[in-house]
Length: 171
Image (cartoon, rainbow, N blue to C red; front, side, top):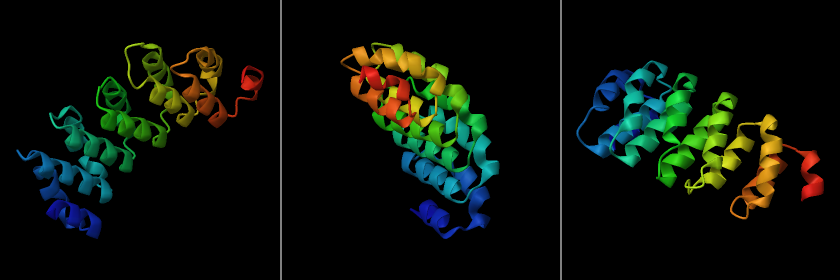
């Protein structure tokens, strides 16, 4: 709770202590420290936050993703894309949001591979991520998803977000 408060109050002097706290044995302490560093815009903390993407606690992972998003850590994009393989919906949603806010258009091909994975329970979210990433070059492939009952709704939404007028006859 103290870490959260420091972040909300903007106490930049706390950054060194918060960075050290990222290694605390308590999940909630690590999670709150990551969140606080994000709120403080402590860009120099990115290397300290990155290992939390592999933390055993999904809450810590989500807070680390959110902090990296707030810190505009484009250098974290490869690690964020790797996290899309998770089976945790909260992590997945946070990563998709982070990638879209970071403007990680270069992640679109890897995201599309997750769409094509029939075992991926979050394939619909991945389709929507393509829209958030502005992946206009994926429109022809997204149009093919209109025939997939499992992904049709997400494909329609994504085509609309992308302004894909060429898809109108198929709708």
